[in-house]
Amino acid sequence: MHAPKSNFLAAFENFWNTWATNKPNVTVIICGSAASWMIKKVVRNKGGLHNRITHKIVLPPFNLNETELFLKSRGVHLNHYQIVQLYMAIGGIPQYLEMAKPGKSAAQMIDEACFQKNGFLYDEFNELYHSLFYQADRHIKIIRALAAKPSGLSRNALIDAGDLQTGGTASNLLDELSAAGFITPYIPFGKKKKDSIYKLTDEFSLFYLKFMEPNRTAAKGAWQKLSASPVYTSWSGLAFENLCMKHIAAIERKLGIAAIYTESSSWRSPGNIAGGTQIDLLIDRRDQCINLCEMKFYNSSFAIDQKYAEELRRKENAFREQTKTRKQIFHTMVTTFGLLPNEHSIGLIDSAVTMEDLFVEIEDR
Image (spheres, rainbow, N blue to C red):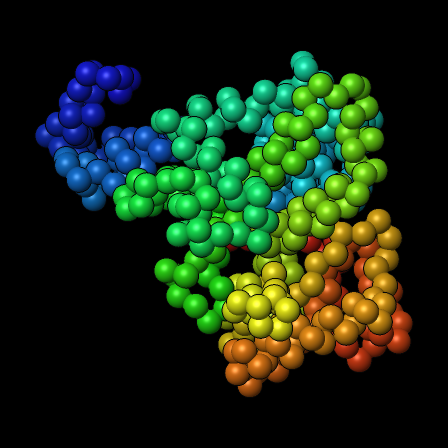
């Protein structure tokens, strides 16, 4: 309706302010996929619609618990490991999950939907961004820059990597992608909002750029072959970390700290100090404790060896030295099938969270 030269928005502003605003039985709900239009023209309206919004409804993708319930409602019964594999590739988007079919494994579903030319998601990437954003090529530049840097980029680094204009243009693009759920700004531990690190957190975009785009001519069974490659091992680790970051509330419930005020963040040592140490998830608690979380995607119980145990101790020492924290440090492992206790984990790992713990129902999301 708001076509070029239609003057629709001005007419709507007049309609609302002169007539509808005095009618208690009139409510206007604006919804849909045109996120950038709603943000620019309505949410940030400086004219007649300024400050007219009474409520914003943020509708996030399904979490793991909701994904399982949705699949079961459609007759698709998968175990949690299969659901996690599916979620890491396409996320909790109901429209994407509708392609799931009873009797198919996650690998079969992904192969059919993503790698076959008539697949449900084969052409989704470009169609998605161009349907959501005006001049979407600019948004895709940001997405590609972040996909190439899984650890994330600062605003300035992202502007350089995406060849963006500084100022309002870059801010608007980042805000639009954040509001639509494609990217997420994280404030590093001990830093302020201006120091935020942006990460690409949309599962399908990550999956497309990593596997689908380079394998557009792949034959049937492509994903089952790709999922046996070393590239898959690297990607699955990062994808599982991303999944865990979206289920922090479930992790906190398992740790018994759901009632304690917490702040979640990441941390990396400045420059080359401590060999570039990085902690992807730490939970800073009001009770003067911090959980340093390590996330590992594995097809069986995970065992810590001597080398990895030494790495965890080095991370803790670097974190203590650089942050000067006096809080109690707890080491937490988040794995798919649990932690196998041995001489390296006993006395080092304080708590363990499994894939099953991420499927709990979370209220007030």
